[in-house]
Structures are given as C-alpha cells and as structure tokens.
Image (cartoon, rainbow, N blue to C red; front, side, top):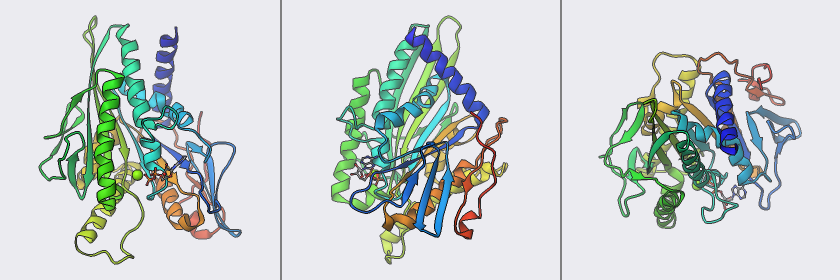
Amino acid sequence: EALEADAIRRKLHNQIQELRGNVRVFCRVRPTTSETAIVDCAPDGTSVELKRSDADVAGFEFDRVFGPSSTQCEVFDEVSQLVQSALDGYKVCLFSYGQTGSGKTHTMLGDQHNEETRGIIPRAVAKVVEASEANAKKGWKYRMCASYVEIYNEQVRDLLKAGSGHSDKHSIAHVDGVTEVSGVNKEPVESVEAAAGLVRRAAAARAVEATQMNAVSSRSHTIFMLYITGEHEASGSRLTGCLNLVDLAGSERVGRSGAEGARLKEACAINKSLSCLGDVFQALSNGQKHIPYRNSKLTYLLQPCLGGDGKTLMFVNINPEAPSAEESMCSLKFAAQVNAVELGRGGAKRNIVSGIGKKEDKEDSSSGDKKPD
Ligand code: ADP
Ligand code: MG
C-alpha cells in the first residue's frame, strides 16, 4: 500500500530523471540576520534575482529555488526520491556549493539532534534504511555500510577514526563502479540508530577542528559515503548503488588577503579542487571524450556519480546580504554553468541564465525553452 506507492513514485522519479538528464541544480537562499536582502526568490519556485542596484539586476533559473523561509523538511522532500534511487543501483551524489556562511552545512547536516532542523544527511540515511527494510518484503536483501571522510589540501582524513589526521596514504580507486578509499573505515549501517551514531561521531570530529583550526573547516570538503549492495534472492539479481553527500569547501576567493606559505598552498588547493569540479562539468557539457576527473581527489572520488549513468544534484547556497553580492554572483554563475550540463540521454536541457540588467551578466545566457515537467 504505502510502500507500494513509494516504490512506484521512485520508479517514476527514475524515469523522469532519465528524460531530463542527470545533473540538477537547486538554489537555496538562507535567511538574513541584520543586513537587508538583495536576493529575491520568485513565487514560482524556480527563479531568483540578485539586485546589486536598481540598474543592475541579474536573474537565474534553476530546477528549484528555496527561499529563506523554506524548511529542512521541504528541502528533503524534494530530494528524497533521488536519495532513494541509490537503492535501485544508481550512483547518486548531492553536494552543497557556496561561500562560507551561506548555509552549506545547515543544508547538508543541520542540527542532527533536532528532528526539525536536521539536514539532508541524517534524513537521507534514515530514509534509505527505512526504504531498504520495505524492499526486504519484496525479496531484496541489502547490505549497507558507510565512510565519512574529509578532503583538505588534497589529503584525506577519516572522520570515523578518532584522532586521525589528513594524510596522503589514502588512495582512491573505482571497484565495480563505486569509489573505494583505501585505509578508511567502512562501517556497517544496519539501523537508523547505527547510522545516526556514525553521523554524530563524524560531526564531533569536525566540531573539534572547527574550534581548534577554523581554516580547516571552511576549506575542506566533507563527504558522507553510503555503499549499498542489494540481492534479489528469487531472481539472483544484484545491484550496487552509492550515495555521496558532500559539504564542499567555501567557494570564496582567497588571495587578496596576502596568504603566504602554508596558507597559500591551502588556498590554491581549495581553489584547485573547486575549479577542477567546474572543469569536469564543463567537459561533460561540451561532450568531451576526456573528462579530467583525475585532476583532483574530489572529482576522482565523485566520478561514478558525475558521469555515465550517475545522478548529481548540486545545491547552490546563497547568503542574500549586500556585502556578499560579489560572491553570490560568482556562485550563481557557477551554478548556472553546472545547470547547463546535459549528459546524453535525450532530454532537452532548459535554459540557464536569463540575464536582465548589466550586459556582462548576460554573457552565458541562452534563450530558453521551459524545462519539461
Ligand atoms: P556554511 O556551511 O556554508 O559555512 P552554515 O551552514 O554554517 O554555512 O550557515 C551559517 C549560519 O547560518 C549557521 O549559523 C546556520 O545555522 C545559519 N543558517 C544557514 N542557512 C540557514 C537556513 N536556511 N535557516 C536557518 N539558519 C540558517
Ligand atoms: Mg560549513
């Protein structure tokens, strides 16, 4: 009944996703504190405007735009089917992109102790465990395990191993279409409680860092990796899916502050991996034969989700306050480029930027057909 309906919804979701291409972009605008907001979300739920002055207004369209009053629950509802498609053998990746303070961690992790304000990671794990139990009734047996890592300066740290540091010793490989990171804990996820415990441990490891070394937390990527193998006993069918939930490093430009030495290396590495991500999307959208996944740890780790029949959803998080105008513009432009990526499979990708206002903001606009629905 309810389970059946959910399975049907998931199947429909997979079919729709196949028609529309496998990279989606959602925009989320956080609430303001004291400053006035210069970002407007239209009531249609798909467009957003950045108003730098009366004469300078830039408009962008995405698959979905969440305004400042959107709740964690509303956001999760929109990604729930995508998350669950990992149980059907898809390689799925969700990530949040934006400057520090724009709401990336709030969106991905939130307050995991609070039913209402917890973010996508705790909700997703609970949902997948729940759905796998429902599928068990139809003869599917799943095994799930998880890793939780941080990438900083092209070095990996295992957030599930208390006290471990960043290191070069963790190598990344693809086995059976999923990413393996050597020397990193892969822990069984047999229940919602087990999953919650894991998320808590990783968050605690990060919290220590946030107080001791502020730079690391804003300049590193954290990736929650859920591995899923399923077996249908009667038919002997097998599948391997994965779900990667990524809280990216802050996208703000560094350098103007005169970073030197280790700081500079840090800044470059972060810029490098985010720009590598941009390069990968660019190459995908150009239909290039060679996609430069190997240029950064992050893109190599996410390769199964970014290309082929992977599914990717990017949140671009926006701080709508006036002092963030330039960074917001950069983030929205990056997101618009990602939104233009269409990976084969037929569906016409809709328009990207509908630039109104200053000429330079129109450069990558394409007059567009509305997205199919
Ligand atoms: P980032 O991870 O991008 O640096 P955070 O997620 O830490 O940013 O957000 C910065 C602050 O703003 C945090 O205190 C967070 O709780 C708050 N915040 C961000 N987005 C929202 C939102 N949608 N609703 C309420 N508070 C938010
Ligand atoms: Mg954060």
